[in-house]
Amino acid sequence: MEDKQMIIDSGALIDISAQLFEVGGLRKEDAAVVAHDLVAANLRGLDSHGVSRIPMYLERIKRKVVNPQPNITVQNVFPAVSIVDGDDGMGFLAGHRAMEEAISLAEKNGIGLVGVRRSTHYGMAALYVQDAIKKGYLSFAYTNSSPALPVWGSRTAFLGASPFAAGVPGGKEEVPYVLDMAMTVIARGKIRLAATHGEPIPPGLALDKDGAPTTDAAKAFEGVCLPFGGAKGSALAMLMDILAGVLTGANYGGDVKSLYFDHSEPQNVGHLFIAIRPDLFVSKDEFEDRMDTFVKRAKALPKAQGFEEILIPGEPEEKTVAKRLETGILLTEEVIKTLQETGLAHGIDISSQLNEIALNS
Image 1 (cartoon, helix red, strand yellow):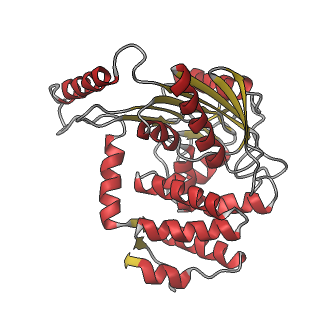
Image 2 (image 1 turned 60 degrees about the vertical axis):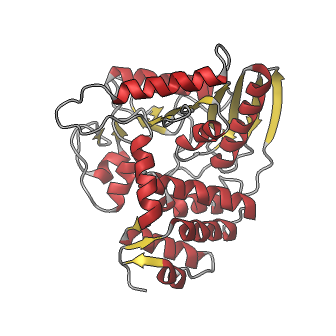
């Protein structure tokens, strides 16, 4: 097959991705979970956290810094608090298990708090608050990550991009609230994707390894990302590392191993999840009515110049999901090539499959 862009049905892309993870050593059911999560990122328009990461994840498994078949354990330490040991497996698996536990604790206690240690990169943070929304719970997801941005005033990578996510179920009529944001001006994965494609990045996003501003994505990826909001973003990144790393017993303070450049040992990423019942202070019906009222009021506000519609956090991504479910997901030439090469390295040729399922090219 000639290397070229193509548009692929999301379901078919999940199947191919799961196949790659299964031949890479994951259990069939776990491969399906990770594949679904990566394609979910593509569907939401977060291509930097989608299937383009498959080669990197499989390389880490090959180098034995990720356990392909972890024994994830849960220990309840207080009535509403548990700790999850991810056994150095894929962070997606530990993340879903931890949010499941947080929801279970919240069902009994009103609120559930779950820490995770010995995990790895867990992809798009929105995945986990969406788990809670589906069950009708409010939630927060914190994680630390490998050094990507400096403490304010420094030029050395020390803090992680450490995305924060929060989710609130919608009411009876309106959409849920889904926040997923990194502590950087833009997600570091987007800089990596630009570097992969040889594209420049806008000024003000990163410094090169010598501490100089750069628009070269490759140099930026080797250097440091800048925190959003200057000192405020840096302070929030510190908080993420304290809550997800220091508190849980995971690595912290610059010790989380690089996802891309360090294969010396497992990352030991930390996460922290909180799930909250919606009926703690008012009935569930009243909560839903109040959420409907809140969203309606927000959307009815006078629009600023240049805006045709007021959207709730998470709503733009859901519009992208609806569009891509209908039209398919665009895979670039570079992503197609790396997926093909990864498949061949693991003894399978996905070229014919890609040809068969391409909706357009």
